[in-house]
Image (tube, rainbow, N blue to C red; front, side, top):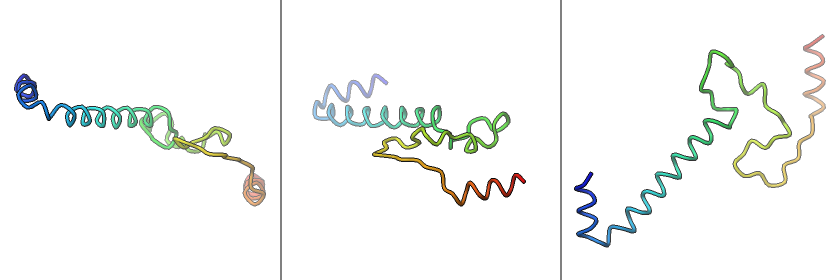
Length: 86
């Protein structure tokens, strides 16, 4: 580890590259952890909830960025649910 710091101190032009690489690695790691903990289509525990996609709240946006999402039930799907339940 100290070898890397010594190399960076000898070659000062590597400092921006190392900084950008650290920012990219931090961003990728934090995004992965965010999706693992908050998104319902990622399964971590298959024993307690094997089908998490069935419990999705349709009013809550599921994308990282949602622009003017409007949800309304589909009539055909509602009719199909009624027919299956009977």
